[in-house]
Amino acid sequence: MKLHDDKLVRHLIIFVLLKLCALIVLWWLFVKDAKVNVNAESVFEKISSQQKQEESPK
Image (tube, rainbow, N blue to C red; front, top):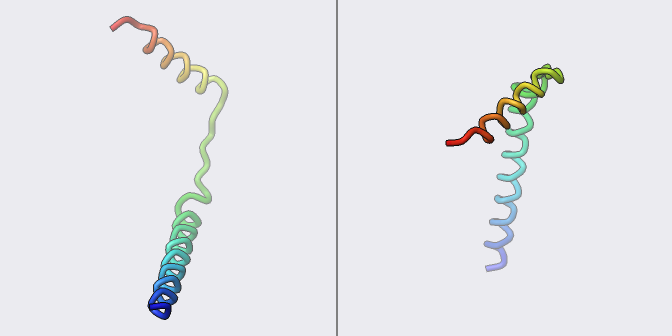
């Protein structure tokens, strides 16, 4: 039974490492260079509009 457990642990470690590598590659291809420009005025407008919606009676 010990040999079977070692094989299972080895396969699980390999699987997790492969998934981690796949996530890193996907991040590198699609997310790394994504830039979001945010200015203070747009943030203020978004927050204030949400607060107005919460305060309005339903």
